[in-house]
Image 1 (tube, one colour):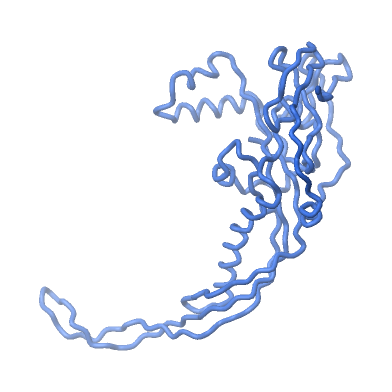
Image 2: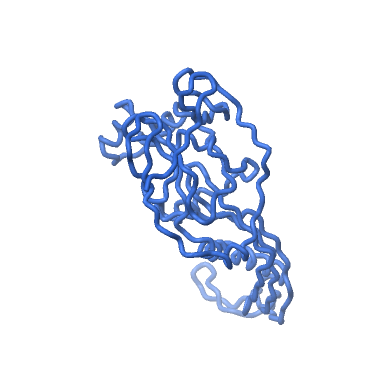
Amino acid sequence: MRLSTTNIPCPSCGGSQVFLPSSRRLSCEFCHQESDIVSNGKVTTRDYLSAINSSTQESKTKREVACKRCGASFVFKDREFASRCPYCDTPTMIEPLQEITPNALIPFTLSQRAAQKRFKIWVGSRWFAPNAFKEYLEEGKKLIGRYIPYWGYDTHTISHYQGERGDSYYVTVTKRVEVNGKMELRSVQEERVSWSSASGVIDSDFRDITVGATTTIDPSRLDSISPWHSSDIHPFDLRYISGFKAEEYTIELRDGFDRAKIEIDSEIRYRVKADIGGDYQRIHNISTEYNDIGYKALLFPF
C-alpha cells in the first residue's frame, strides 16, 4: 500500500521548497524565492499516564511512497517519515504514522556550507580516518541533516529519605612520626566523625529532562549531546523538515521515562545530601513519588 506524500510547493514556480537554516525560512530549490514560516501554535506538554494507559500495539506499515516529481516508487527506511527521492532528489515526506506523533522540534541552524566546513575540520582531526571518508566532500556530495526523536519529561517529585549526618571534629593524639629520618613522639590533630540520624522530605520540580528515543544511534552518544536549548523549541511543522531526513521513535515512552529517572534520581541524591548537611553524609534509603508527569515528543537536529 502506497502512502500519501507531501512536499512544500513554491508559490512562485511550483517547485519544492526546503527549510533554509541560515534564514529560518523556506527557499525554493529552483527559483530560490523565500517565504516565511508563520506558526501560531504553542508547544504543549502532554499527559504521560494518559498516553501509557491508552497505548496500543503498534502495527507495522511498509512505508512505500511515490515521488510527486518523477513518479518513482521507493520505500522509506524503517521509522523514517522524511527523506529525498533516491532518483530525482526531491524532498518527500509523509505524516508520522506512530501512535504518538511529534509535537515540537528544534530547527537546524547550520547551513550546508557551514556544516561542510565543520565536517572538513573534524575529518582533518581524525588521524586514522579512511581516505574514502576524507574524500567524501571533495566529490561534491552533500551532507544531509537528520531529525532524531527525543522524549522530554516534566515531573514533580516527593522524596522521603533516611540517612546519617557526619560532623567532623579533631582530637589531639600522640603518634610516632618520622622527623629528619628519626622516629619521634609528637602530638598531632586527628579527625573524628560524629554520626547522627537524619531524615526528611525533598520536593523537586524537573523540567525538560530529555533522552534519546531512537536505537539507530547509540543512546549514550545522544545523551552526551545534551543539554539542548529548550528556548528554541518550536511547534512541530513539516515545513521545518522539508529537505532533511527525519525518523520516529523506536524507544517507547515508558522506557524513555525509566532512563530519564536515572538522571532525576542522581539529582535527587545530590539534593538529599545538601539537605542532610554536615561534613559527610550517608544515605540509607530514598523513596520517591513521581507526580504530574508530562512529556513532549521532540525532534532534534543531528
